[in-house]
Image 1 (cartoon, rainbow, N blue to C red):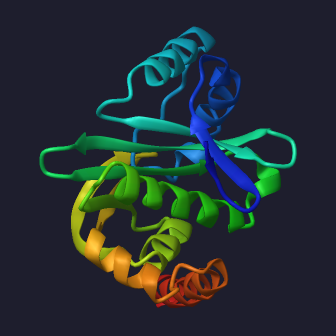
Image 2: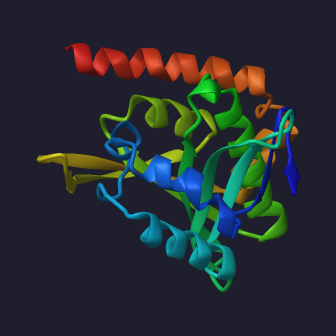
Image 3: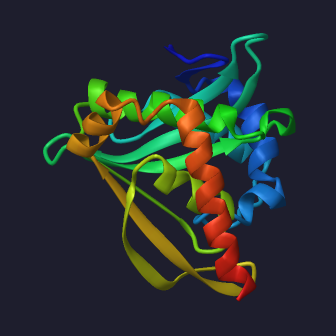
Length: 206
């Protein structure tokens, strides 16, 4: 278990399918991800969760749970874990429970996942991506000191539209330096998220 201030992360378990089923069928959640919009049956979802719970060498799925009541409020993942090149791709964080969408749990989960990737998996490079229109992710990912490495023009097609995909990466040395400087304090991160959000909003009002 990876423990934060108000949440903890554990490995995904087979019985978690009931929650992930709801979130995978939530159009508001699915439309903002880089993956395709999927409509899944309960049987498909049960098998999907069981597969993720059983196999965690090249990808790891975490359940995000509240410390107050052990309630699962979301999930997150690391993909393409390559121990030779010490790299992995952060699949992002889904906070499916609407009662925990103020951003605090997202940042706590982010810090726990980054610590796990760098300190436990011994990764040197963590990558991530998001849609250009996803204001929240584009505000939060750089706030965690990921650097933008490029843009995939019209890389994603969904919702009847073509979307640009923004690519980011965080290296261990940068992560370590910011940790030692205290830059990963949650209050500091919130300020960075707010600042980034204001700048990105200007982009869409031009």
